[in-house]
Length: 90
Image (cartoon, rainbow, N blue to C red; front, side, top):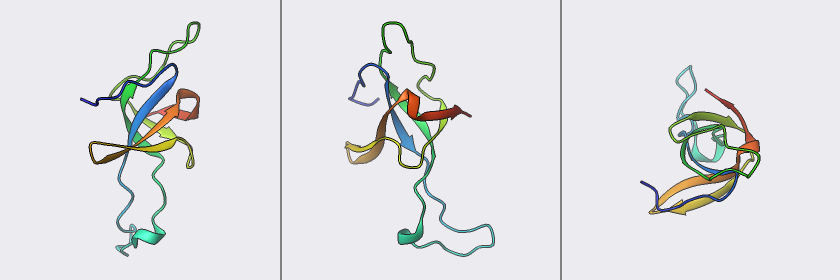
């Protein structure tokens, strides 16, 4: 369980790992890996007064390539972003 509680319409996402190799088997170096755009929701805020949150803990979501702010909690990296930065629930 995370020791963080996002406020209002913010969510904390654990990004899926970046691809290690292409479908043809070519290894992708760290400098060429694209930021993942898919992740797992691990914490959610309480929503706004007239606008409850749609996502919940455990949802797999798609978000913008440059969405969110990177944070580190207990040695793991996460993204914190507004729910409006999330494009879809998978």
